[in-house]
Length: 332
Image 1 (cartoon, helix red, strand yellow):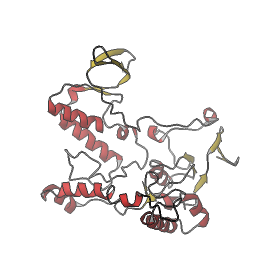
Image 2 (cartoon, helix red, strand yellow):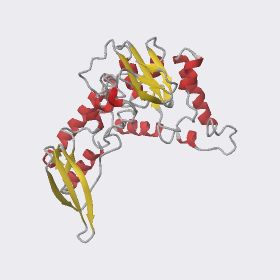
Image 3 (spheres, helix red, strand yellow):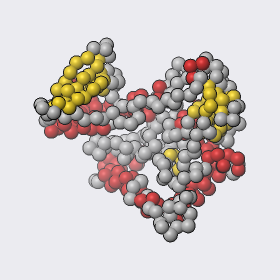
Image 4 (spheres, rainbow, N blue to C red):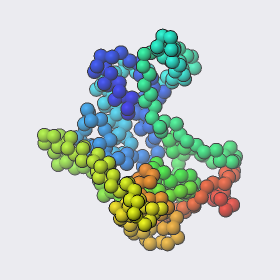
């Protein structure tokens, strides 16, 4: 996403450049992540290029296919294809002090390598382009399909299967509710809970009137984009400031943050039918916004399904046919 933005600006400025991309197509994390339920959890009228606004988004929070289609469309319109080198990877970049240039080594798909001498090297690899797979004892013994959400194996039919999902982060809260109706049993391992906030527009379609307004009312598109930014930055800032006189600093940094905490807990309690055991598992100990705020993509509701079990704590071991939790219980 950022790499294409930089390439577009360099192209407009007439500065020669080469764009190295390890994948066979553009999109970065949106090319690589195709798991069930994949979507953006930032409003896409803001999660898009300011210099290539799209007034006709079908959703306020676009699904993965709509995001990657937008990226591919932008790439085609940027006219930078001649500078793009797909399925090539930078393996080293060494600064040559005497010549004041970079010696960059690039590896092609076939394994052969070549060098580029460059005045400037810009990293646009992002943070999410390499799956983080934990080293769990016994992983090599498991006889069923096993894969990371960012390397989703679409050849595996989950219908009627017993599935273990390890993790409850931003991707996991989209994935779990998407596969829960399909599987026989879904066991979710949660190392630590996250706050997930409800947004009524998360699955809403924008509608033709909104699309028309964003396309035709002067400056409305830019105002709406700024409003989305403001709502998640300046508006939230007072909730993050530490009040030295606040009596509950471990729970919240100030009264405004504590009010948000109360709202979140009320929503969560409603979604889990006020189940005290489940509430104890899913309410974080840290203040709201202490970590990245997630979106409630039917996450809490999914945890109440008869075929879904939430297991807290770390994974102790993986066997040939299941996963052992911290208490030594095996989950098939």
